[in-house]
Length: 530
Image (cartoon, rainbow, N blue to C red; front, side, top):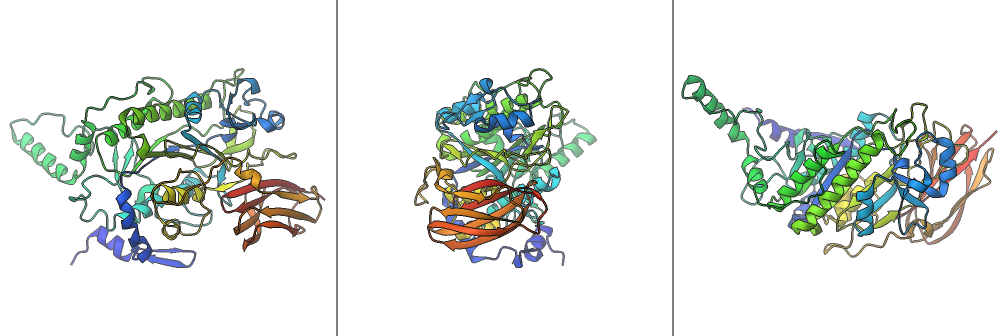
């Protein structure tokens, strides 16, 4: 007896993570996700920026501009040309081509999470993309995406018995690209990929466009078409949704304008949402952010490849949000950008930047908590061409917060999807499934963190405060962003504490001490010398 391949994958596939073996997701916690499916009108749109975006030229820390000017003078935006961010006390600005995102900021529809990364970062595009898409740590290899695991919990045994009367639509749609690891579950794609909506799943190119001739070859073509259409389970419903007469925003970039391809993908997403498609997750992307050289135009840092890329993303997202509002569906859609890593603090001699670590992440839409979460990255004295922006927030905390605050998962359910416990951040406004979320304003200032003396030769004293009762982590990272110690990981009461930190076995150089207390975080640089 031959077993169906998908059934075999689902009944026999094993995933071992941190000593926990999971078989077929036969887990009572995940089965409870079905209760969350009642919120299927909530939509998540992922915008992936392939290549590793330079966060320091995207969200610019003006409070450390002098230090930046000494480290990246050949690419840094002139201070008087930056786009100010009201509410940041003049400490932070945007790249001048991000006028669309600035418009969302002004209208309370943009959230910025500063310094997002993960411990022990990989500088490989492929590996770091896998880490972000799977939700793994730097030393885990996973074969399921974070959204793939989520969708498998809500729609068990997909694609067996799908589509059906209750779920006639694809549960995820990837526009203008292949379905990546983020939307997979043990080799099964948890959605469909489309390039257009005229024949959404036309797997054989022009198989439906050429007329059928009244001869033997025509009969064969008609037969091939009928067989292919049998596998095209979602094509008709996608086409029907796109055929709805939706009047779109006039702001989308077109033709040769920066971001035209991304804009077209987001316009397709808006069409499908407007047309009533019940899909929960859409994934779009744009590429080109691997800016090792000619990131800016020689002699005019306001122009160049990176400026065009940023404008394309900014204008496309702003048009998409305008579209959603005109269509009357903006309250149902949450958007999020991510790139596999940031870039180095120092520029190189080719008017570019090399692979780095942490970078800002944008959330957009009506549901976001507007404002900036976390302080500007630290540009410490002693920074050299190997120094990375230190992680402030673990990207899995962003994922966990989206799952809980937007898709209404419990903390236990989110932990099961993300294979561990991660802090919940105030990034989505309170929904009917949550007890409420705090404002992001001033969160980073609620903690105190100090390393003294610094510089030091062997030991230094870390003085830190806890603002709220709960889990407290104190981590030490080297200049490359790798975690070299975690002296504190415990539940603690509010108060001020001191830790004698022995760094005698560590090499000399720059280090960063990171304090996390629930949703709060703070990073402080320190220097070990001979």
